[in-house]
Each structure stands twice: as C-alpha cells, then as structure tokens.
Length: 182
Image (cartoon, rainbow, N blue to C red; front, side, top):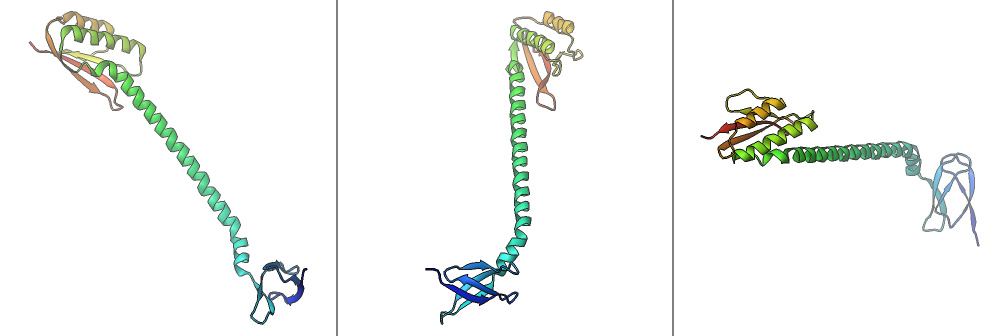
C-alpha cells in the first residue's frame, strides 16, 4: 500500500504530497529536484538535490564536448590509418620498383650489367614518373634509350664492372653508375 506524506519544498515552500517509498521527487511548482530522506524519528524531509540541478545544466555542455572529442578522435584515427595505408602502399611501390635494380649493385659481369640496362630501358618506357639515368665511366648521365643502348654495346660480356645504385629523395632508384674494373 502506498503511504502518502505531506512535506514542504525547501526551495519554494510549496506543500507537496509524496510517496514515502520514493527516494527522489521533483517539486511540481518550481521543478526543483528533491531527495526524500527519513531521519531517525521517522520524520520525512525533502532536501534540494543541488548536484542534479548542476548536472542538468552542465550535461548538454559535457555531452557536446565528449561528442566533439570522440568525433575528432575518429577523424584523427581515420586520417592516421589512411596515411599509414598510403605510406605502406608507397613503401610497397618503392620496393617493387627498386627490386629490378638493387640486385645489380656491386661487382658484376658484363652480361649481368647488360641485362640490368635492358631493365632500365624497359622501366623508363613504362614509368615516366621515375626515370632511371645511366652513367658509364666518365660519360654524362642519360636516360635516353639510344644512348643507353650505346653503353650496352660498349660493354664486354666477360669483363667485370662496378655498378653503383643511387636513389632519389623518395627512395626510388634514379641513377645507375657503371665503372669498368679493368
């Protein structure tokens, strides 16, 4: 059975009737949140629930702030993962591009160097963005197909050559220097 008790609102002084079993109520006149308390003498009192009032005023600000922080965090995470993906893709592209040439570095037989120059000519035709230049002994560096063919024609299959690989600022092979080891 519900037991109704009459109390005064400590904020506006209005007479309120409340269910004794409830722990909280709201004044129907001033909308103040109230805590219902029983003291030792079984007297029922209402006190203003100030924290609830403060929280109800602050909640929208806190909610919006948390929402903005979460939204910015999600965008930042997406941006970071996107950058990581593009970096990893770029690193993959660089390694894939360089694989055909980096094995050529060091002291090599002429036949091996000729094969490398064929790869340079092919790569330069297919990849205009990352041109590879060739420099032979004291000649000028070139990426011209006919001049690279001339360099190939000057190489002896059995001679030893020192092959030096240089990279551009992005990490792509951009210069192959060939020096005769005679």
